[in-house]
Image (cartoon, rainbow, N blue to C red):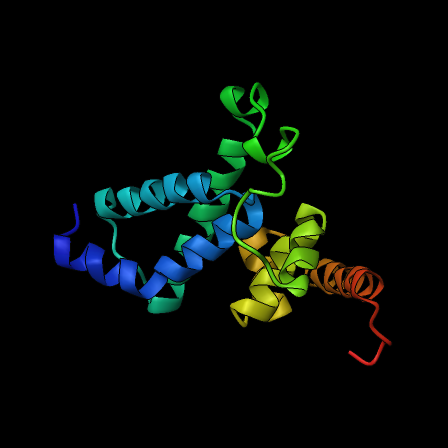
Length: 160
């Protein structure tokens, strides 16, 4: 089990990454907070050391993605409706997003993940492939298709 100081250091270092990844994947602040706690609890209980800081960051990303997947396919989740989907509440739901963030959130899940990891976290296609267990060329294809969908949605001229 890790010390309180190690956990606080990890939260400072990786907290924003975990939160943004959850928000991109789940589109819910409440679910993001739940997954955030789950990920850092797993970290606190983990005894095995990491090989490097990059290995530690990759572990956080992989655990976060897996926790989001587990939540999305849970029995409870499949039997509920979010408040945003109820009539009359859509206008009141959540903070205002920029048009670019709204367009990214509207992308299919497979595109959101690669766009986030590439443009927000700065990972290369090869690194994203290793994290998501996908071929590097598949990652390039997903990025290309995501950019095309974003151009169509945002009305870009194709000079990206």
